[in-house]
Image (cartoon, rainbow, N blue to C red):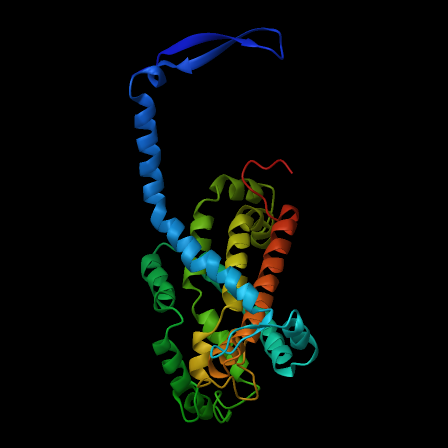
Length: 330
């Protein structure tokens, strides 16, 4: 073990009108120590440089420019023209398509996210109490998350739920004739929610990891006190798992607001039928890249950002009342 020698320096402190003893590492007084420290700092900033360039060049500066564009009328082919808050006023007062897309997005988020979390938690509970074949089932349930919301999955999903597709033909056997889900305005949104729930594997694995960290002694103590399975779940599992629930809920809400690829592919970029897949992200893309109204699209993007930020802030502010961390005395 090495120790760093220190040298006591006596200085005059005018504020205290006395002598102050300060300790200064002796190695900093050695010749070349200051130059070596400068070189180490330069090396550290050198390693940070790629991240800093990416952050400022690909994130911060584009965000600032898009915020500026949201207050302009800009169609790529002509210079931006400042219009103030006209884009935002139009969004909330004279744009029925935006209001419909906001409504559809909120339904998708508020319905799909809880269902996905509940399904992931239930499967995680089952796998936590099952030893035989647990590895196989974990892999099987996690596999859809590896694929992600890719173009290929959206194409396959569209073929499965189309008229005369496997799902439609399977329901016809039981006398249920829906005529396909893709062209049905009342069924395509539930189909999109079902697609999101189907990809709960990553959330399930996080829940399972959290369940493994709960001490078994807590369950044994609750069982000795006469608590049944439901009471043990409410009194032990949920409080101990609340940080993981909070984490998955936050990521799930943010991810649900960003749904785009599957909706765009399934609707062929139209947002149909009857605008039921015209989520805010799809409407933003059509406004900016199909219609060329980049300034208006930037305003939509910033409204979406503010909504997500407000929801995240509400979750963080309310977590004190329901999230219990280890060692918390509340």
